[in-house]
Length: 368
Image 1 (spheres, helix red, strand yellow):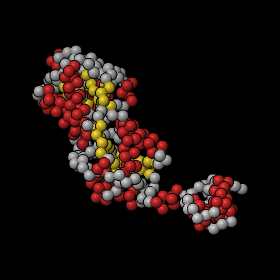
Image 2: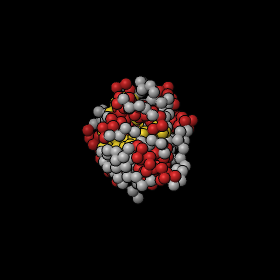
Image 3: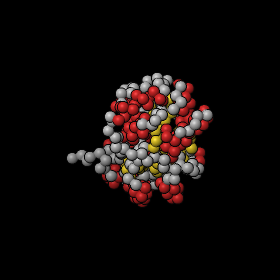
Image 4: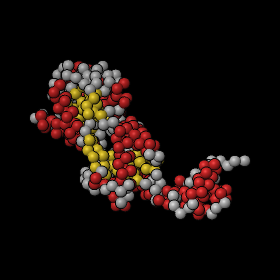
């Protein structure tokens, strides 16, 4: 009975050819001190028998596992994050082209994240990590820097020096969003943001404020709301802003998930996004194109970002210095049907909303 492919050992090859195990090993490792005739016999036996070198043994020898890791934090929303799904798909596709694997796990708290990092590093499960949803003061990055363990961050912390990262210029993007809405005729522009311990959420709020300041528009704190990053958070954010005595006629959202919730809330009130109220998101998720109405969004292509970060980590593992692997990119505005010129003033919108809001049950989601 023939042996299963992959179960053939180097001893089997040596016995088949009638040479020492060390001779087979030297041929497989491309040593040149073996005669051509013996080399050919050994390579033919390897092919005929279906011998495959042990990946585990090979990796141990060179100190690499050919596996990268990512730990998904699940404490900032309801656990469903469409951007991260696209991002991980981009990582996996890039690694598949290189013959590498991706280990994905989750963590539900800061302590759990560090415990998971310690376990995976101690067990030599991965060669390096991709860190996402970076915080202003991020314990993961502090820990990995302390160990000098390879990683690349998707996003930055409050101090972006000394490690490899890829990020979007969030401040510039959201300042541009304010300018765009103002150019359409909107003067009451709301902001629906995410938890401010996340650095990108803080940067996007800052960009919103910078955009107002650059235009000479007074910043009204009542036009900002901070919510969990989810559709439910978007529902709650829209309710908070549209309940104002002088509601915004446009809302700029920190993520597409929040924007989708805002559009849903507008629909519940009988308002149409893009004509009655303008809504703009951020992420460029494919689902946005199929909403009613299709969502205007700033796009960074989550899948492309995942692939780029994965390739940066490979470069880091191949010896490049972290300081040379820092890149800031621009998002681009994809205009669809959810944005447009205001069809009514803030006062007129408030009159339309007054009775409709009183008939709505509370959303049940709380701001942060």
